[in-house]
Length: 555
Image 1 (cartoon, rainbow, N blue to C red):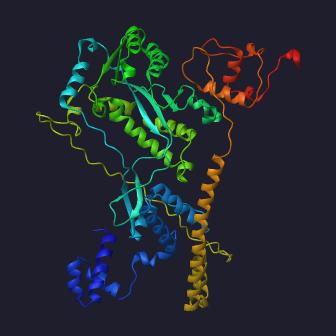
Image 2 (spheres, rainbow, N blue to C red):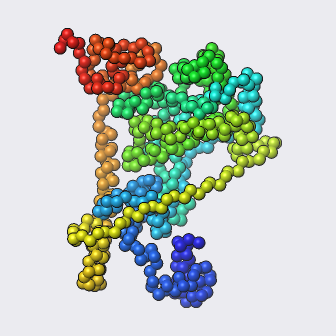
Image 3 (cartoon, one colour):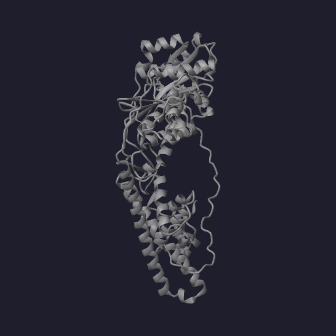
């Protein structure tokens, strides 16, 4: 039994004793130690009460923080744990402290404050219809066991699919809410436009560069940061009216990304591409390209992607979860603002780096039962609709408890220093204790009362300052985002299918009015294909970007 439970039971027992019950009877009724109850009746403070002055945040600030969290939860915007710690840190900084909160500070806070606790938030959304049956799964695996695929090694198997990303934080996560509630409804950050990411992974753990589709008429250069442009050099970008994939996009993807990749790795050999039966994958042009480039298409039955598709089973879930975590920590999301497209790109790249590892991709193929081949794995999923066939459900393994290192104590003892003007309630209380140890005058009741009143006033001021600073940051960020930006359409060369980072950098230089002449072609090495000298100089990430290059005879 935890110390927190003992304290709760002892409080109930003390209440009964004060109402006239016997101490021994109350201790037996509430399963609380009799000595513990006797100490409480004698006025002996608990350990938490005795160490109250040693808390990082004063009791007054903790009460205000708990009250704010409960109020936000009742209004449908329960603060996430990241945002809750952010506000606590702001309060701590406003009170004059310079250290940071420990990793497990919120655990001790929740144990001290009974009015709040962590709860699982739930976004209200429609549930999709589950059409996965035993017959459909068997049909899919029968296709994989076809004689045409028998001699193709596993490293030539690929899976592709689209993943929709809303331009917002979204998702269910832990929030701080009222202790009596089991579920907290949380209002999401302002919903933004729909972004589609087309991914493709191989059975040997390789991930192809993604295709990102924005909603709009054209790709705009202001969506990208030139300083970090090299991070997306192998990515491809496109804009569509709704931010979704289409038949022309699928054709361009297989010609510009998939076919060059498989030809460079496997030569002129047959490969297998597992995908859904969307119209973009079943039209005549797409099928012809696959046939002419030795690509076998394997389609799974409708409404089975969450059981037999590799990306849905073991990649997209982890990727979206990691993306939400990264987005919740970006400055705009912390302030309650919609993340920009630049924030989305940076967060998505970081999520891909963390999740799309060879081991994760290989485990996804294993979980789907494709490699090693084991159709009992998808058949044992709890999402399979069992008709007349009895199939055992797979039981989830208990999660292992990972012991974390103890949080270092940030409250180092203060060295004896001359008394200075306190900047917060905590500093005033510390100075008072130091003076009381050397001067009996400061141990008088009137002096202690004065110190408590003054420290309470400083803590209240610190709380107001923290809330006002957060409001100023929010308004300043909104003001900065409303500033007028010059829009620049990104143009691509004739014959080029997707927007590349080189095109984005070129558009940004045109926007800044830079001039580049053609007589420097001999000084520029153009890797990867025949392009003109202007493109080579502009795509090069050297100091030539910051210069105006002119002909020698015109100087």
